[in-house]
Image (cartoon, rainbow, N blue to C red):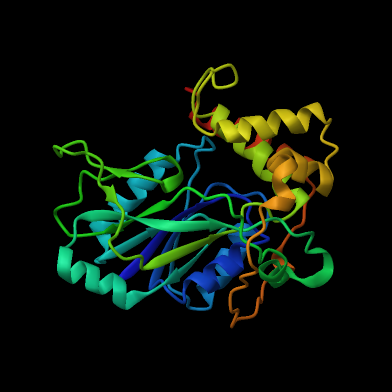
Length: 311
């Protein structure tokens, strides 16, 4: 268990199997916490684990999106129970290409107990997958966005020296407030990894991510709807646009909402990854409407609220 990844997921049935199989080409063991998914995500993860794939699965029963707190706790729990040297912080729509030898060489020359930025490339929405199967997403979304994406962080873990590391929202930064210079994440002198990011896969996924995501952020703390600045304000923007459009969103509307008039000018040269695996569990997808998913999230939130109420 030399190289591990940490991930939080929620309602990602369309991408979760591909996420696991693709990233296990670079990762030795994956820790995945499911945040009370109401679609087939948890069933697919259990099926993958039953295959014998190196997965540690857990359930996060707090609907609020507290990614910084949860990822930090997940990291600390993992290193207390397991030995590893490298930690990648991945979302379910991120696919890692890794040069192990360059990464190992960087550790040999600079040591551990630090964090490095990993370059991330967004890929543009290219149309609906429809009946082509979920693996078609890698062909449909094979055009990189020329607008630079924010980097993500990964950790060179060293036992006994990383207990103060705190992972920031979005997994973009790692900090340690016990240090003179608390900002731990730095640019590597030579890039050793690339993250392919598929943020916009379908109209349904866009609606789901924007609505469920913003509801989860509202559960995080009071006043975020009116705040001038808040975590996840980009989701609030999309949430408001969708409501203004009475939730009647098609592909053209979605492209306008997300990319504006710049969509046609943002295309880089096609860069499709090599896919050397098949998907086995598409039949476990529930393919629920966004209305059903919202209702089930609301139901689960109410159940959780009453479960915590004093008797």
